[in-house]
Image (spheres, rainbow, N blue to C red):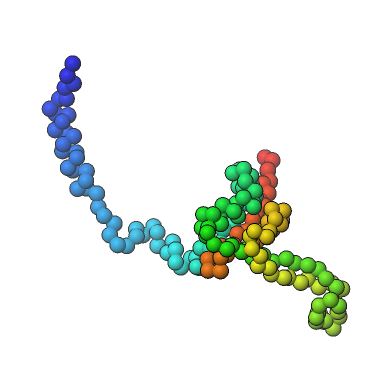
Length: 159
């Protein structure tokens, strides 16, 4: 059994295939007027934003991985094969007599917040230590990636 296409249908398809492409107009170099309010990428983000990753704990849970596994996957994907360091800050509250604290308004504070930054090889940091960090930096001394872990609370609104 041979399929037969009628001559008018074949002619119509032939004409349409030449007419439609000729009716399409290129936009040219300028974007359409609707897009004038959108700034180019290089104006809206700095180069440091390109090295920053923010991920929620809920996203990690949905992927079935921990913070440590996520960090290790970033290391393997971006800067593997080199000595990798994790840079992080720890904040401690200490007695002002232990540090050179300045009086505030003429009164010596009862406690002082001290922030210390650490640069430790990845091999020397335990899973528990990484899980406790909300902000860290992965670096090999040249390439640097800042990772920020956020916890998102979903609030249901009753109607």
